[in-house]
Every structure is written in structure tokens, then in C-alpha cells.
Image: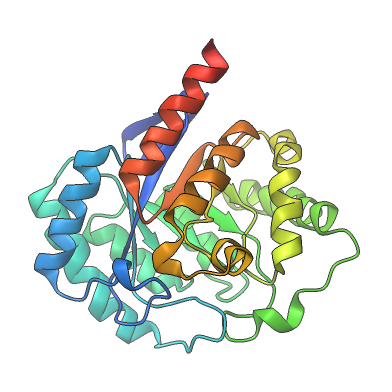
Length: 276
């Protein structure tokens, strides 16, 4: 069991939970997740909470391979109104801000977010880790090499599992020394990883339990699924559920998904299997 202190509210993870993805962008790789108007964001947030999402993850720019950085100001203009609107409509909701900018993290938490999800683990902004420590909120640290635009050029490993594990042994200690109390680990499926790397990490996911941190898995509708199946992101829900189920069996604590209902069902069924 894990507990996360979300600005004074305790989020207890005594069984796996689901994080719903809300992309306040016009260019997310999965068209169904693109929400660019506050009313659309609110409808999606209400739907996800109703379906059982424990966390809403709000992002303001695409981080798909090859994507361009829209800049900090552009990101702020997208995410802050969305977070404020969600907190006004759904004051009990738990909101995560998906950003690698420390200033966006700071302003998002001020607007109502209570968790920071950083794909770069502080490598793209050296003020991120001290900022999160000062904010005293949970921190999702993800493994990535390079930037979203360049990461495919860095998908080279002698042993992807051991190299990612070594990264997190050091990163978790760095966060502890900085004063971050709650760290969540995300191995970074699809970020500077080939399809083969992703399947290897999924197969070996249970190894990361030695870090004694919650494991977040983000496989939803990614290329590992749709390219393997020869389909598209829009047709990748069934494959997502299959891999999410495998991730749950290997120790995933949080599923980050576009489709909350199906992920919650996977959690319930996998839980029954384990309890029984």
C-alpha cells in the first residue's frame, strides 16, 4: 500500500488506481483525447471521474515523438484555465499537471493541481525537482533520454531494464535528498524506447518494485500497440486493455489512460483474480 499527500488530502493506493488523460492540445497523437475548449475539458473530466478515475492528468502540449515544444507561455495559457475550471466544477478532484517546466508546475499547483507529472524527471528544467520539493506535492518521475523531438535518436541500450532501473535508483535518491516525500516511478514506455524495449520493460516491470515506489504505467493507445497490431491509435483500445492487464499482474499501481472505464474494469477483474 502507498499513500500520497496531495496538498493535505491523502490519496491511498491500497489497490491499483486509474489516471485519466486530458490533453488541452490540438495535436495529441490520439485524436480522441484532444480537448481545446474549457467546456470540452469539463465534460471529459466529469465523465472520467464518473467512470472511476482517481486522478486527472492535465497536459498542455504533445510529447509524441518528434513533437515541437510550444514553450512555457503557450503551455500555461492552455492548462491554467482548464485546471481552474475543473477545480471549480469538481472541487474534490485530484489533478496532476503534466509538464517539464518548473514554472508551469508552480502555477498549476497554485491553480488547483496537487501532483506533478514530469516526463523528463527534471532533466529539461533543473529547477523542477527543487520546485516540486518546495511545493510539497507528489512527483511522477519518468525515464526519457533526449527531448520529445529527439528521443527516438537515443533508443539504444545494452540492457534496457537494468539501465532504466539504475536511472531510477539514482533519481529516487536525488528526489529524497531534495526533499520530495512522494515519488512515483514511470519507466517511460515509448520515450526513447523501441517496441522491443517496451515489451522487455513490461515483461520485467515487477523488478522495479524493489524501488518501493508506486509504479505508473502509460501504455494507452501507444505505437507499441497499434504498430504491432497494424492498426491505429483510434483502434488500439483492446490492445491497451490487454497490456494494462499484464502491467497490473506485474505490479502497476497507477494506469495512465485515455479510456477510464475499460481500465477500471481491468483493475477490478485483475484484483479479483489476485484475491481469489
